[in-house]
Image (tube, rainbow, N blue to C red; front, top):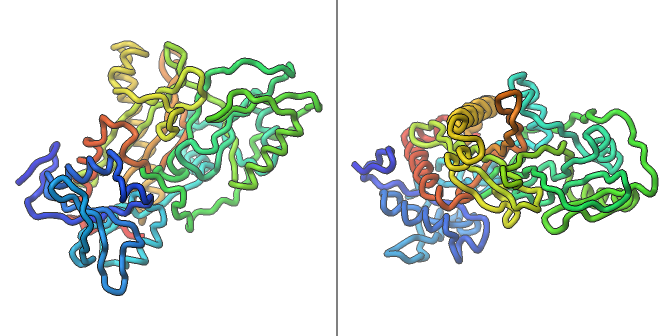
Length: 421
């Protein structure tokens, strides 16, 4: 019997094929992937990498990349020899399911909601009312202007389905008609709301059974503007770029034409040294199918408005939760906040999984803001990430990998957990 971080693994080897969606993950595996391959060998898991194009349905053979004596080698394996397909990086769950039929166990039976759908679903539960930040569909420039008026003249516009903070824009009305200096704010866009999440995040997650037919009525009265109004636009590459009302309308139209958008009210969490931050609550299934929680502070740059695990350079850096909370809130409150965050992640996860009883989720990520409030602390939900990937914190790569290995074991013992697509 072998043990890894509390997970008992028998010497009987499990064979797992992990689908990779980016060619570079196969030709030059990233640090996270190498961590998984090396750790798998140590704990009796025969893990290999492949893409869906590497599978020959006629012969049942997969051409995969295996770790052998510290080197990545190509060799062929028959599907009959594979116990599990790890499809956490591949959002097209129905496509994967059809390719392999019922002959194989998948790690992820994908379900996902758009940002607007997620907002409506969570709003159905009164317990989450104070957690939600106002959000509305943006189908036209007029919708954005209405939302700005209803939310103090500043908002975040972002794709209704998106990940890695791609396409996140801050829009602020400057009533003085002059360009102001950059201000420090924070919002979050995740790995698939949305899509999981998910390091594999999956922008193309299956939403076949989800509907999006509710129009938002957050803003109710038209905004009063003149041709001289100035709006300041910020994103990953620019800060407070001035736009006239007309130019802003043209810009918004072009963005909406590419991808459906939502507006979210601006909300911020700021460190003691004036940096934007968010808290990533990440829950993954491990051994026995139980949820394991990691809490990861993500701290942005001082002159940025993004503090997001998938935002690349805009993310700034991540750190250890205990050190962060003690430094920001003091020893007395640190444990209290950590417990409240853990409880919040658990409640959100059970609620969202219960909404899809026939679809098994293996991981969730929540981007949370913290503010002092009436002698305590209030929490705001920036994003739900349905399929967050391993790797946002290098220090947690191995820990998250070991949790995943425990999940592999549970899937084998429970034949996929008796939850199917």
